[in-house]
Length: 87
Image 1 (spheres, rainbow, N blue to C red):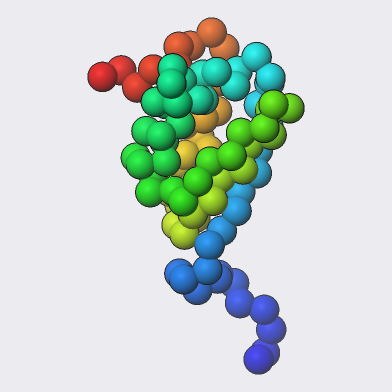
Image 2: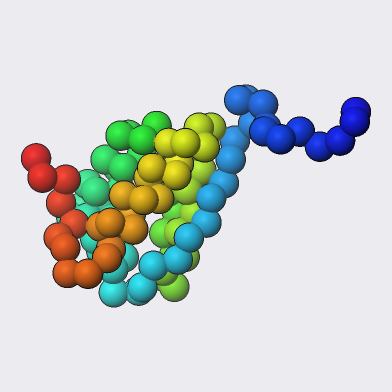
């Protein structure tokens, strides 16, 4: 090999980490876990792990979809906006 690959093969799972404030955890999980399940399904993720500290780990195979999910989580937890999907 001439060097490291710029992108991992599509069969290799990716992990992305982020941090939110502890008081915004409920906005990501939603009532009965509805919001977090919707995020996983809508963005085709393998899993979203939310720690009590506010650390979030997203895992999946599509980096672009994971980035979109991260942006959605940031949108859900920014300011005083509600945590619903609007539907």
